[in-house]
Length: 281
Length: 252
Image (cartoon, each protein chain N blue to C red):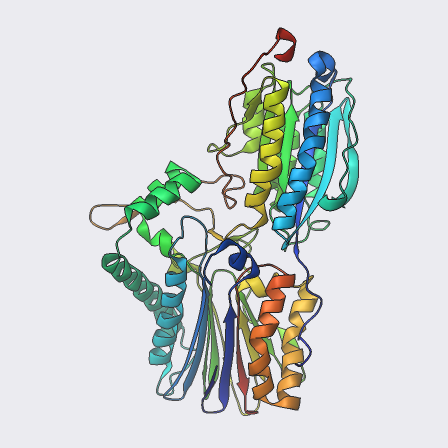
């Protein structure tokens, strides 16, 4: 899968996790990208997948599509990524429009008695009651997104997952600060009432050849598949070298198999990776 | 195909730690022998569950306490290689000391951030003789101590259920009550299989936050809620009623 924009292009793949294959669960990640009016946006989402979040695959799809739509419309026409009011508006719009989309889905497809009974049997009456009180829990999902305009990059994250930039010299770094609450399988979420306040965002101005050569976005199942942080951070520089040496075709072709191998030998979780790269397709 | 990008891949470590009471009272009515037998017999079942969940690397250790505490099996042992060494009983019930030692092992490092939530199983027949609360505070100060799945098994009716509930730290999970060897064997096996299975492939959960309620007008209100191990849905124990001939000596 590939999209070609002004000077940036996107490649992405998403695979069902090895543990999900064993247990019969679907891929609860989603990824989407768009190039529109000078803006390239890539967004991916990881549905929580717990028993309470039994529609989180839908929640993830709604998250990826909402984020690409909102970011591309807000940044179209040469808007400045450093506009803090715009960033705040994007956060609020993404959360509000995801919430609306999830509620529409729920109205179209109300919870079935069997779904709620299964939840109650599997995790107890309290879990069932929590979903009945607050149905958006069923759709809980994270969001990682990047928007690139001719003059800047906007990084946007709610919950776990990884955003990594790789410079032209091959140096990997994380553009967003860590959130200490994201530990031990717990994550902030689009389904939280505080979701808009939990968004982390950063902007970076682009001036000529400055800025990253490659941006890697991934769900947490990918980083969790590496023995250590160093091994994960090596992915970006390796991919940049491959893109330069071989072009995008072989990378696009191999990406799903690499992700399947990572899940099988690593975390077992669904794995989704998106790449935004500059001027080498 | 091109070489896979990035460094070495690895499954995620899952630390499973037995914390066993070896005080003098465990000598009576064959309790310590029953515990030895129960864990030894549950180990193959534990190995089977681990085989079925190859993305979790189950590592087992054993911490014992009586007068003081010490690691009975200190090495993080892959479950496939785990063999039970019999415990013996005698001395006081220094549970607080054991929890303090456990807290040291829940630090990062030696734990890694990418580990799965550890499973800590406390088995006791009595009341702590040292400062339990200090030990529990030390344990829950550590990120993995707080996030661990904490399970407790009460052996006999003299076990301090209030202390065990505090160790569990989750009102949705009660201590398992084992008043005879069969009930103990069932409880040990349930922990070794059902709990291990749940901990091996946990899904993400939203961060602990106020519980959510939605009003008639659509307004959202919150009330505080935070529990240990809340991100791993511990299944409800399904323990068969122990029937058949039971002698007075079998009841603790």
